[in-house]
Length: 134
Image (tube, rainbow, N blue to C red):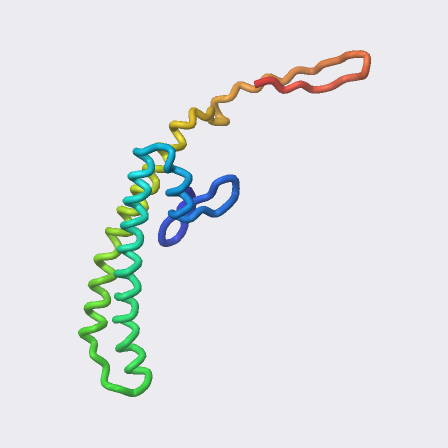
């Protein structure tokens, strides 16, 4: 997971993953699956509020540009919908990050900084060489 403007992007081996992809990937562990499923639901709800809010803000702006009499109350409602979407989106990001961290910790991967590589200079009848052992 990488933080970007407006949220996170999720990568596995350099490939972009959506929340739907993550849900499939994390299905093997019930706890991570429940977290990512909730994250995906929250993300969908937040997106609905964002789109509706954007439309309500855009309508009066478009009406004004076209020379009409705009209903600015709609823009206010749109701002309110976007304000509601923000904490829902943050909750979605938090749940997705928790699911990924839990899943990654269950893999028992050794972090690179904990590896103790040992470098040896070796010689045999074919010549000199380097050997790296972990």
